[in-house]
Length: 209
Image (cartoon, rainbow, N blue to C red; front, side, top):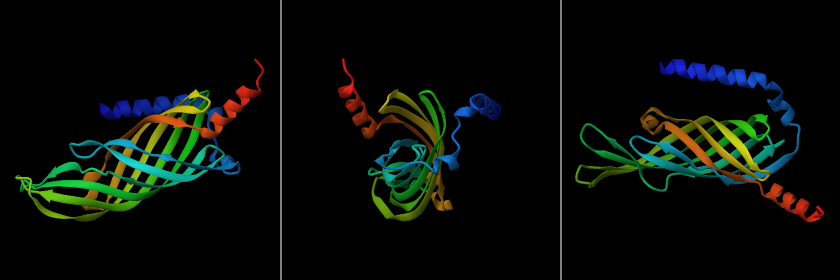
């Protein structure tokens, strides 16, 4: 039943995009256009085994034609997350830190509404602690993690320089002993374009009243 609903939603999305195909951006045309520097926060809410939490991120990169963005970043969970309990009752708590490279492509725009594909891959470590049922630490260490995130994001222009952004996706974590860290993510926030803000202020000053 769930698979049928997912397929129906996907078909409906394809029909919608086909109906407005003139608004779909061609990536190779975008690569030829102007470049710019970007930076910001990349926080996303997530679920890691019985624990709703946030992965915090900082990034910098370049934009091509205001449609494609390539980013490098650092990501982590400063506070311990997860609550994995093995057959002996040992609790494992985790702190993730990893570097990442990513790509975003604004492939569809219709008036104020936009859609973006998101792909990010990283490498880092999970610094973990293992506690017994009495809360006493019995072991600690670190494990290699290779997280890969992919998703679909949406935006809406509230003002020329402010966008409402939201999105969702899935995080795959390798190798096998780190697969328990996989899970979905969601995003919700505002994007502020300082360049457009200054331009709007300048236009308002020069426009006679």
